[in-house]
Image (cartoon, rainbow, N blue to C red; front, top):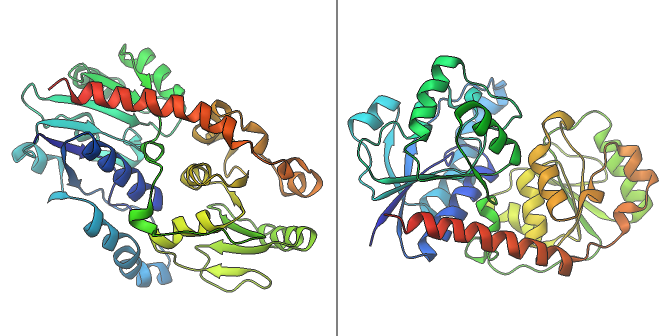
Length: 350
């Protein structure tokens, strides 16, 4: 059995990072390949407060490391690009992505590793749902010359957003194909969650950006609509609302699956809302950097689920219109089939 090495952001303390890695791994295994996640560690430059520093290692282990150990087959740990070059993984095929693997602010001094500079032979390498995470090219002229040369060794390039197609064409002269985030390639996450059952009149919220008006808005929304509202990843009690303080990956998915309606600014919460056919409200965290959510919603004819203010949600009945998932699934199935065809074709080139 041929071995596929996947290089992506799997080790971040982030639900989406784990789930996109898990989903791509499962999709590749279902196509008949052995999978190894290349365990390249990215330096954490985020500035944590005292409580975060205290709880960080505990959160990382119990929420994220336990499912990684259970569901991901990882290589030895690589702490630098040089370690990868000196002792590259022994794989037959290499996949880059998904996630923001070409976001220079994240990959920093590891940047060329995420263009497979450590592969010194003619083994098949391609990108699947790779992303820049922004609408502009972040590399200087010298870096661009090196990146262009490395990209020419790829058999194909699959990207997650249409903006990435334009960036690659304009800056490197290479063609790319639009594919789905890998979490949409599989529809059954019961290996992680077990059985789920919807709770009536329930709403779950997962929002990265919460200003001072967010919780008053939720309480007003609850009073007007008689929902039982839960908030994921909030560590302190909130009057009138239910806390889910540090949800495991299992609890995170189940909270979405069991709810009647979801409110979020998260890309992967949106995806799992669609997978589980939930009603949902999208409140963008940053309108200027919203393309991955807006593109997905537009492609599935769901742009009417976007709201740009709390008042817009409270004063509009638009969110009450039920999503016709029979139409959504027709649109989505075609995209899933095209993305899986891309994956199968690239894996068969070795």
